[in-house]
Image 1 (cartoon, each protein chain N blue to C red):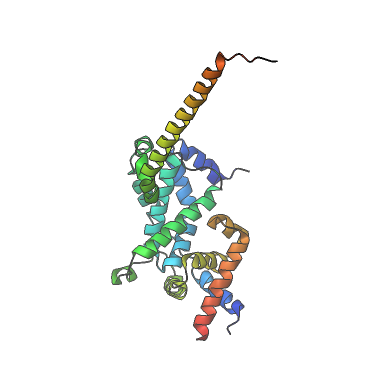
Image 2: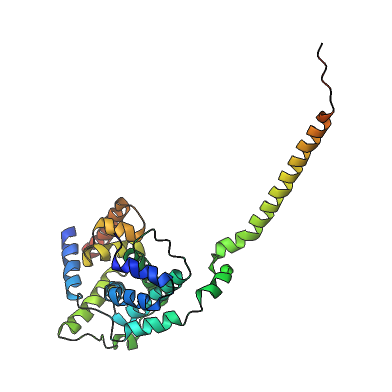
Length: 96
Length: 174
């Protein structure tokens, strides 16, 4: 088997050989022109849908329905409790 | 302690584009070098790193940089993701091979060959293993730094390195 140090030594040698690699002149200007060509941040903030991952987009209607069902259930449960409380409001408890 | 880069990022977040230019000036050499080591040539690396900077600028000005990590670490992460995306998309053409690398001196030819050698040698490794190995053995980073960049534990980094070296050894020995 090859010694793992041999692999690291070879990679370190290749790393040394590529130490002088750098972007070509004008790279910063090119980057800045591409970055500034982007639409302003405020405009992008309204385009929130584009930032939602595709999987999440598919799940959004399901989540919305689940949320709606949850709200209906909560309202009904509260209403049942209110009715039960109202029924007991005028009840007189007699102690013998 | 707040570094110059972190301070520049704060200014860039407030819309100061010259601050972002300072960040690009300060980090582009190391990011293009890293990307070139993963892609095998400077032209593709420049495209990938430019895309990374555009993503970073968008995140900074859009208030999406959460300051959980240092700016340099965060930029490395974006650049690595952009490089991996570029590697998946691109198919090297003959024209790319002829692009002038743009740096002076007799080292250029040797560096061009070395970049290609790294990319060819590690090209078949899974992205996470290749990234960890390049950062460790070529860039000389510590496992802690790599873990921060790759958002995983140091143990996970070590595991990726072991797997990468094993794959390379097996390939070489067969």
